[in-house]
Length: 113
Length: 112
Image 1 (cartoon, rainbow over the protein chains, first blue to last red):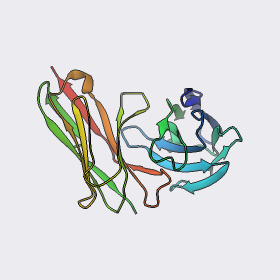
Image 2: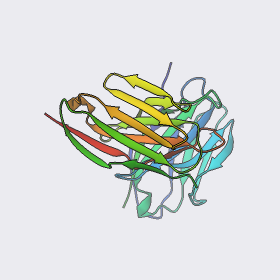
Image 3: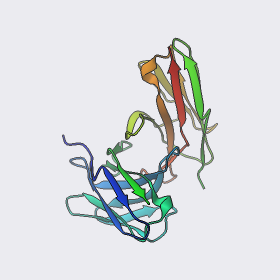
């Protein structure tokens, strides 16, 4: 069974640029959730995708957008990067309504300068 | 709006001692999760607590849930250095669908 994978591992971008982060969900999982974890903080929910549709969103501006593909992998796109976007971005996959288990990927560390 | 508060935020303890981390949340939820995070790493699932009165134990860690008090505890027994990490509780938003609200975390340091 393949776990959740994310790419890239680290990324450095300049303010105003755009970035795409990728997540491959665990085999058999149809739901992907994205979280932002600023340094020293708990993760914050960005949005969730279920069967290629957005299924809920946290308090993040529209410049944070996402996609889920037919194989249930997912992308997180951030436009017009700001310094405060520097964080660890985590994706978690699960089988929707399978009860309770989300599996987190290793994360992408984004630094905006 | 669901809020999750953990305390303490920082905990330094001696090996062999016991301690408890507390997690309070503000609105009704039936699912609570505990995660461990090592520096620079992702989240490792420790416990999933699904109902009032649930108690789960793994090694030196034991978690419990009181949904009426909106309180969960993570008890550490006879701490060892390997338990040094940051521990997060997370509560599922009402209505389910696994959208989690996390506490700020408790950074645990176990000293020899």
